[in-house]
Amino acid sequence: MGAVRRSHVAALAIVTALLLFLLTRLPPPAALPLPPAPQVYRDTTTAPPTPVTNKTTAAPPLTSPIAPVKSVPVSPVSPPKAAAKNGSLPVLTGDVYVAGHEKPHPELCPSLGAKLRLLILVTSAPSHSAARDAVRMTWGHFAVRSDIAFAFVIGVPPDTMRPAIEAEDTLYGDIIVGRFMDSYSNLTLKTLSMLEWVDTYCPRVQRLLKTDDDMFINVPKLIEFMKAPSRVNATKTIWGKVVKKSLPKRTSRSKYFVSPLQFPGKVFPDFTTGPAYLLTTDVIRLILAAAPSQPYLRLEDVFITGVLGNKLGIKRQHATEFYNRKIAHPCAVQRGVSVHMVRYHEQFDLWRKLLDGKMKCAS
Ligand SMILES: *[C@@H]1O[C@H](CO)[C@@H](O)[C@H](O)[C@H]1NC(C)=O
Ligand SMILES: *[C@@H]1O[C@H](CO)[C@@H](O)[C@H](O)[C@H]1NC(C)=O
Ligand SMILES: *[C@@H]1O[C@H](CO)[C@@H](O)[C@H](O)[C@H]1NC(C)=O
Ligand SMILES: *[C@@H]1O[C@H](CO)[C@@H](O)[C@H](O)[C@H]1NC(C)=O
Image (cartoon, rainbow, N blue to C red):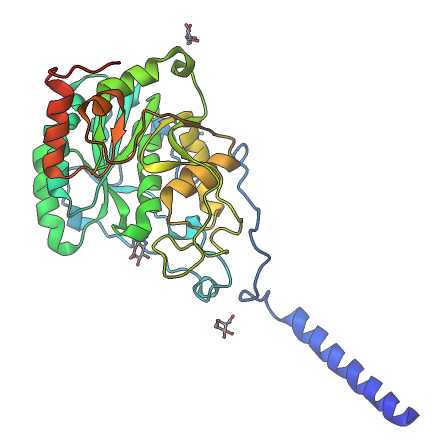
């Protein structure tokens, strides 16, 4: 018995020694599951954010605005690490975000935004040319004001669509093209690209409205909103339709599916819904600095205004004027800042309702 036990012990010791030896020799196992939510963030006070460039030395832009889009070599996808593919590590935002713009249009923001009251950037998709036209012909007209700048932001169009986008941009000069493939799962990259553009080409503007091409924006109302004494000097704030206690969808069939690796918490931090939100531009650099080390989350509003907003101590303020839903009543249109789900012909309908002055609405 004793001999048997001794030989067991000896065998065990040899195996253990072997294992220890192997472990010290092996590189750190990339595929081992990490504890959820590595709370490692870049320190924004010491580390310069990667996408941020020195304003005085940043220009010239990477490509001339008139250079054909096609001449730019783009590798929009940095392949996610093997381990991330296997679902054991989150894909970090910094691994998928490619800085820079194919068509930056720096001229859209004169004096780096110093004389602007408001910058309106509208996320769009290459195929949405009709929606862009409807916006240009209606509320986008406020871009003629010298204190407002306006542009669309899209991702890299498929080759078949490049000539049409080129032609449209030659006509209007208002399409900023980021370095990512335009797709639903890349909406977060679109917003980051937008913020990077502001940081690079329009860093002195005080307020940014982020909105979409299926929105109607009541610009005079928005300006009134911004001018309110309680808001005019606000800092580190995002205004919009705030959603509280929203739960991540954990069934993989959902359009809004979020894995615990992408977001480990039970409840999303308060966020402002994506169709329209207004930011004080002091938050932009903070967001750009903090985003790369965060797990990529394709719900752009949750990621930008919720996860990062919460992390960075940005106030998210609910404003009833941001309807961010479908509204047809003309008086509601006059009272609100933003209306969602607006189709081509409805832009004209809402525009007329806003401007024709025939309505009798109790204010
Ligand atoms: C930005 O560029 C200016 C002018 O070249 C230089 O004086 C300044 O030190 C630079 N700042 C940073 C943060 O690199
Ligand atoms: C990758 O995932 C599969 C299925 O979940 C698993 O069987 C496999 O062991 C994993 N491989 C690594 C290297 O983690
Ligand atoms: C963008 O979306 C496409 C398709 O959904 C995806 O293959 C790609 O990895 C995404 N990222 C970038 C940077 O284009
Ligand atoms: C906002 O700041 C400006 C400049 O400091 C100041 O003159 C003004 O009174 C402030 N307005 C409010 C409502 O606090």
